[in-house]
Image (cartoon, rainbow, N blue to C red; front, side, top):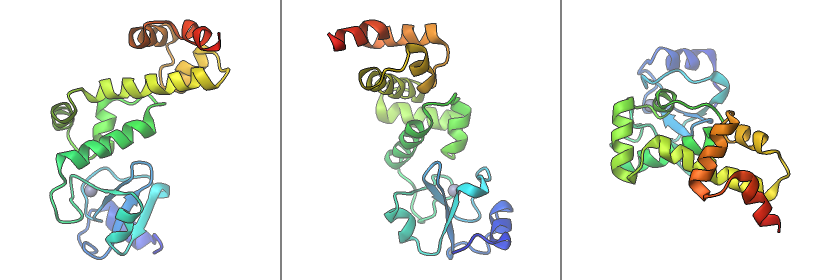
Length: 182
Ligand SMILES: [Zn+2]
C-alpha cells in the first residue's frame, strides 16, 4: 500500500481513523505501530505501510510497546529484544539514553528499569559490549587503524576507546592485534 499524503497526515496527527486497518513500520528500528501511535513521528522515508497485521511480524518487525498494535501488552522480554535490535543498529553512532528511549517508544526511567531487571546490565553497558565485540571483529579481520576502528564503533575519542578495550580484553587494541597475527 502506498504512503499517500492523506495517510501520512493521519500518522502525523495521531488520528484513529485507520486504526485496525493499516499499520506502519519504521525500517530503522523495526518497530511497527498503529497510525494513531503518539510516539515521535518517524522519517517518512523509513516508513512502510501494512494492510495486514501478519505482514510486519513475518518481516521481523516488532510491536510497539506504547501503542500495542496487536492488542496485546508487549511483554518486557519482547521490549528488551527491541531495545537490543536498536542498540545493534545504532552502536556506531553517538546514541544517548534519551535517544534510545525515543527510538524504543518508552520513557528513560522505565526503559532503564526494565532493561536492567531483565538482563542484569544497563542499556549503556550493553551498548559498550556490542561496541567492544565489533571492535574485536574489526581488529581481527581488517587492517583499519586503531583510531578508525574506535570511530567505526561509535567511540571517536581514541584514548577512551583504548582504555575501554583494555578494560574489556586485558590488552590494548594494538597488542591484541599483534598477538593475533603472531
Ligand atoms: Zn507505537
